[in-house]
Structures are given as C-alpha cells and as structure tokens.
Image (cartoon, rainbow, N blue to C red):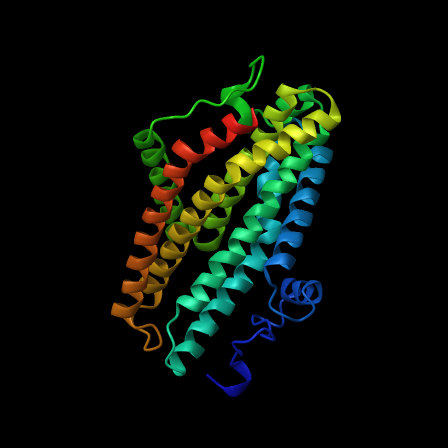
Length: 297
C-alpha cells in the first residue's frame, strides 16, 4: 500500500474510496471530507430515511411501508460502503503497528448501531405524525400482526421462544450478508428499524389519540424497549460483519493481505459475539422490559 493510501487511526481519519465516483464525491461533501462519527451517522440516517419515506408516500402511497425500506437502504448504502472500507484500512494499519483489530471492529459496530437508531427514530416520527388509519394502511407489512387491536398490550414471551427467534434472525442476517454483502446486511437492519419504529408509534396511538399523550406514551415505550432492541440490533450487526468477512475469504482467500486463519478466527469471534449479545438481549426482553413497562404502567 502506497503512503497516499494509508489511513490515519485518529479522529482526523480521511475518507477512502473511489474518488472518481459521483456518489463518493457527494458523500465526501456531506461528511466534510472526514470519516463520519456516530452523531453524524445518526443524523444522516435520520435524514435519508425520512426523505425515503416522503418519496414513498409521494409516488408509492399504497405500499409506502415496503418501498421506503428500499429507499432508505439506497440512501445509506454509500455510507455503509465507506465505513466498511475505512474499517479495512484501519485493520491494516493496526496490524502494522502490532495492535489488535478489535478497536476498528468495535467502532464500526458502534457506527452501524448509530445508523440503525437514526432509522428507527425516523420511522417512529413518521408513525407519530400519521393518523391511525393512514398508518395502518401504509405500514400494514410492519404492524400486520397487531392490526385490529382495540388497545396496546405487552405480553412477555418465554425466554426460549425469544432466543430462538432472535438467533434465527441473526443467522438470516449472516446468510444475507454472505450472499449480498453490504446490501443484504443493510436491508435486514433497515427492515427491523422500520418494524420497531412504526410498531412503537402504533402502540402509542392505540393508547391515546391525543397528540401530547401519544408522544409521552411513545417516549415511555421507547425507553422501556430500547435496551433489548439496541442489543438485538448489535447482535445482528455482528452477524452481518461475520458474513461480509466470510465472503471476503471466499473471494480473496489467496491474497497475502488477508491471512486465512486469522480472518477465520475473527469470523468465529464475531459469530460467538453475535450469539452472546443475542442471548443477553433475550434475557433483557424477557425480564427487564416487562419490569420497566410495569413500573411506568
């Protein structure tokens, strides 16, 4: 790697990528020629997702819930590519100076989590803005199992049911990332953000039709469910990164800069981390979330 391609490890890290790409130049201007940090990523995902929802309602109103997911994915896909490419460069630099790669991977996971939270909030704001009828019609794919309820209620499921369901989603995320790389991983994260964001708003609307009361109900619900929701998302992110690394091994396993055994070990760590985080998320959902909801009524 030539000196001009090296990427510093500190906060002044420069963006890397195909500098002849129009998309890269646009994203460079948006992020002011620096690799974005979590607050910038949160704001960008919030803005791109809101714009995608707006466009979906303008041109695909009858299917806005589904179409908006793909617009959000297209909006954030260049950023996702930039983050993964920067992570690759940081791992190379950490290897040169003899430091472990977990620093780079941990930052990447945190950045992806910031993107997820921004998307979730965008869908939540959209759900709070819409009346109950239009919300049910536009986002029937997200709230389908709960349509027709007279009021919102939370019933804690058994731990094995929650764990098996979440592990199934994590494995599905791994497979989609393996088959479709960044696009597959981003679709899973965006879809889950849309489901949770709209569902929390839907529950708030069911509990109260008044604007202020509904907003307060939404904040209360979000504060109770966000711990296990964020942990689940982090588990899915780890699974997605493992899938991307496996694909890289398959495609470039013979390259000297990608040591097979070391990379396979990282895949194993990410897979184990995904399983552990998913287990903790299931424990939180089955125990802490009902307790918090009971406390706030």
